[in-house]
Amino acid sequence: MDLAKKFTTLDSKVLGKEQFAASGIVGRAFLISIIVGLTYTIIFADPKFVVQSDVVSFLTGALMIRNKVGVNLYDLPTQLFYQNQIVSPFVREAVLPFKIFAPFALPFVPLTSLPLKTAYMFFAFLNFALLGLLPHLTAMTLNKLREFRFWYLAPFIFLPSILSVILGQLSIVLAFIYFLIFKFVKDKKEALAGVFSALLLIKPQYVIAIPFFLLLSDNRRSFLKGFLIVFFILILSTLIISSPDALLKYPSFLLLTENEFFSGHSQRMLTVSSTLYYNLPMKLSSYKGALSLNALFYFIVYCIFIKKYKRVNFDYAFASAVIFSLLFAVHVLEHDLAILMVPFLILLNIAVTDKKNRKTLYILAFLLFLMPQIVLIISPAFGSIMTIFIAITLLYKKTNFGFLWKRK
Image (tube, rainbow, N blue to C red; front, side, top):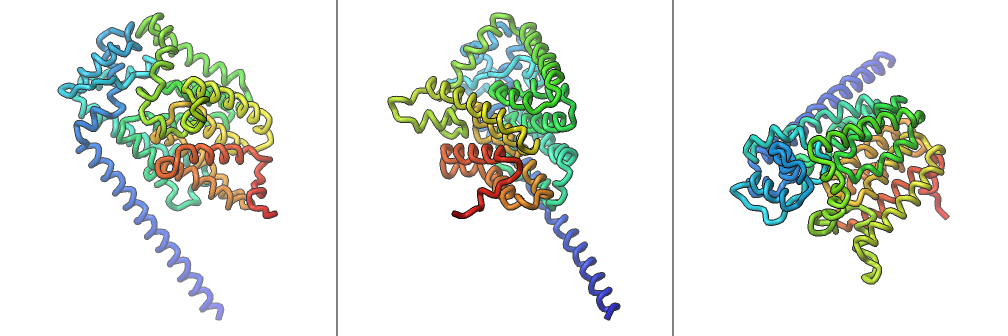
């Protein structure tokens, strides 16, 4: 009888290993199919599509820097002139504005010597390579993720990640930066967290995340030191590359281009400001009014965060802060939601050890993963409300989410 039991146990172990190996093959095969599909899409992208891609904006700023016209870097007619040189023989009637700090355009300067399609492909594959590195970074930071057999596929099947690669966007870079900030704050390396927080200025709207990360840092002086060093380097570099006049024009330029005409598809944005603008009564609805209310609600939420963040696990607080930084960032399209990969993976990682709240964590993580589809298929306003609910829930009393399941 004992011998039979031993053979049964041995058979189950062998079968388990075979199933694990088979599932591993399936996972790798699926990953390869995604890589092949994206590679095909990038190589055979229609030239008309490439002209509309966001990489054109970055190349515009880079070409202006290369041609030493930095003094007009944030002048729309000048940008349109150089942008049409990039997209030639096509012609753009409306400029796709170059809106980032001048130093961030420097890596694109070598690409201005290449044909647009080649430059697009190079940047897309660079984005793709960074996407491939993302699972390695997260595995180092979130060591419980390996409990989920196919977790490494998540960044590759997340809709915003795919869009970011195809559209030539910087959202994957931003997701990478957010993960590094998470790692350094958690490891008590606040100076490095401050350095990478300054790099969020690659898209200025994400500067609103920095007060949250400062609050979560134990050594705030080190965080500020790291942040201010890089911030002043960026300002000084911008002054050298462009001019003091260009830097003074920059805030008004951002305000000028942050409207329906230049933003494009603002009705699809997962932001508080967009939700307010498209859902307030006509008498109260105006873009400046929505921005003002957005600032007010940001202040209220930050005050709530100050009150609650010490009562919760650090991982919950950080995930909540990331979500809030998207909600109040004003300009957030589908590809920008690649940043939601950060709280999604953090929640999965916590779920492994937090058995009490595992059910809730899975639901919240699943909702974050599906948020781009919710925004596109159902409604951006509905998506915004759900995302606010998730962020607030993560700040609710330590790690106890039992209130979600209690019946009256």
